[in-house]
Image (cartoon, rainbow, N blue to C red; front, side, top):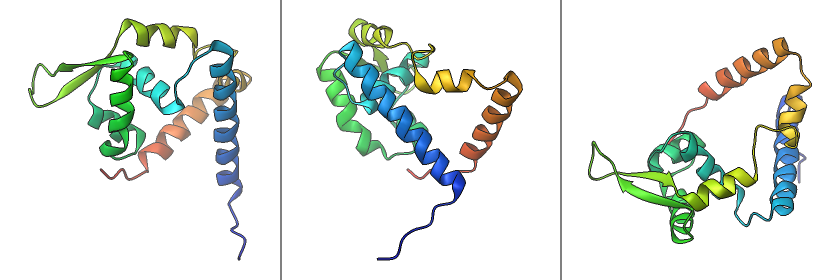
Length: 146
């Protein structure tokens, strides 16, 4: 079997992702949160802006059917609720419940306890802005397929 050669940038991205996931698992255990990371990030996303399942799937770069069981479980366990969209009766807005907000409050993301945030804060403000701009540009270069 031929060994795949990853570019240094790809290796670094992979390392950042792995370190961030490992830190989230640690923080979930410390705060006694029993959700998957995907479930947690759905709650974070709808906290920022109540939205539809399709919009979240597009934002995450996955197909809506992949997200359906995640949303169903969050609804079944009382972390979110669906409300009919005011503009389109065929759509449902996903909204966090009190229980969903409580779990998010147990694990604040904007804290130095978050390893990714702590690492980012060690960069100068100029480097932070440069990195954000480059990452935004990189993300805009992805082609999302539904």
